[in-house]
Image 1 (cartoon, rainbow, N blue to C red):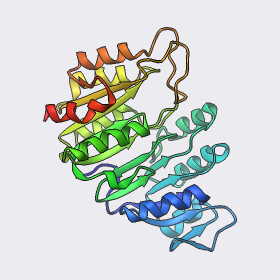
Image 2 (image 1 turned 180 degrees about the horizontal axis):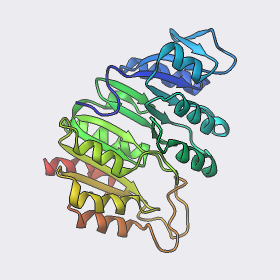
Image 3 (image 1 turned 90 degrees about the vertical axis):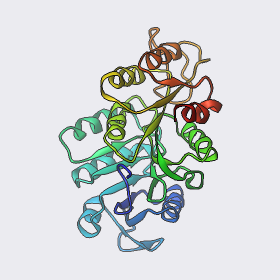
Length: 287
């Protein structure tokens, strides 16, 4: 079983620039059923065999997508997500990075009480190997199986998946939640989905310095999660007050350090890998 995406997922791609078209083609190769593209001014044309519309409202009416993949540049990406929410698209994966935090605060407000789940922004998306790819992850390193992966880091998601596949351990669903300060789906949201998914038997959880999402997830795991988890925290060598990589990966006021996050995870029974190179073997030991 997979979560969020599967063979029935009907995808609309918002933003058909060079990146959008390239990754749309890759998604099609790895099982995605793309039914529409949205690009103002190109309505009535076709791209890669699917129809293009001027607006999400029109695409929702004519093509009935239940998922959207957003490649709109940062200045207009929040508006694109708002359009998907207004069109009641069930799942939106926003790949765009650099969206102003204030724009995302407005998106977070619009999501409350809506019919839409947002993954991202600034994320690699979602993939259920062998079923559907909704994002930019390299599909060929994945293989079907029963280990869920959730991560703030796209690159480390690929590293974990590569190690798992090399060890012959397949994945149920891999979700990059994004590294920005304001995101649509949290660690707890994904862990709850994995807990309730009979097709997921274990999880790899990859966090990083900054914020408190990992500590909150570790606390939630204590009383709500029954499956083995291997974890890792990136940024252990980052100096306090220095942003490293993601906009949300900054230690402020002495909070959000790697040591605090690692301690919280260990206290919740999560097996913490000492380095990124140990992610696969740490999970394998739990199995």
